[in-house]
Length: 416
Image (tube, rainbow, N blue to C red; front, side, top):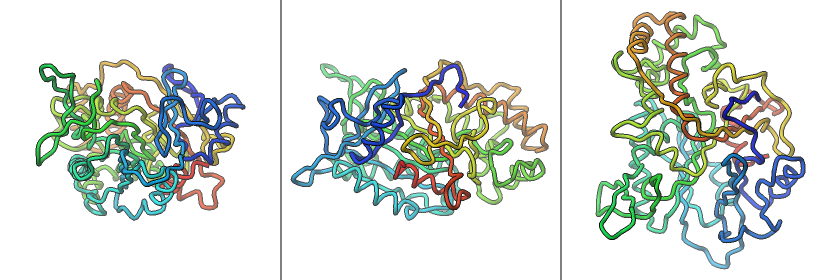
């Protein structure tokens, strides 16, 4: 991978779920990639941290961390304190997570409550990223209010679900308040009952809980407008030209938002708004509250979401797809940590408004490409204000590589 000036290869992979994978991760450390999930002693949990299924965070170079689950052997079942929200993609349902949920429950143990979202099933995903995101936020709040033992929260989202999750965490991000004689407290934005305070942090909470991991799988963070961003169109300009005006007719408001043509020409598209902190929603601050942000992206064979948009990269940062898997991690071909980059963006100047209007009225190649390039750069400026770990995946050696968009679920759950 050709990194940008702010990126460097990390010393370890992002995720490990059980002690059975420690031997593989230890092999990575011996080959120079770092001691990813092995504990300092080699067999015991880290000093000062509890085991029994907690996700451990090991500091790596340049502020990077690696998440590891060290499975304990508790004598009695304990109440879960960590909520893991699974979010499906377009025209899907919680059934898409059936296999992954079962594996994660076995791997993570009793400390985790794994919840597959069901508020945006099938055609409800067409209603718009904002509407679906708010539904998801309300659903998470319902779960949190019913489970008083929860203290931590993580999101694992596939495809379009990653955008729903990004919108939802902005809704769920708590505002810091100060009370006389007390330290700062974070209030859960709940619709019924008295407000609850569970987590105190300078970066805020999500639904009143400590944000731990925000992970997306093949999510179109930069939308789908542009060459090869919607791979099943085969990069054919005539098809990409037709896709933008037809998308709202096929997949409703969501389609217009993904092609960045939603709303009035004078106003920025929703995805650009979601790359900044607005007055009513702090999209970037909500992401920054999480200890870990991880992007899994298919470098090829994904017919739905392009490599560039799912990995938050510019065209010039992409090289020929890698094929050699990292030692012990089948299908994972590259891991990269990108540190936060200070930026004044994103912006939506009058030039962008004129380009948006032209893309809406006359969606020819010249208009759409110029507008998208402008928006893509502004979105990257906003989203790179937080650090990301990027994991590139290639299913070229699998029996049916063309199922890469869905197989990435299995890649994450099994991790090798």
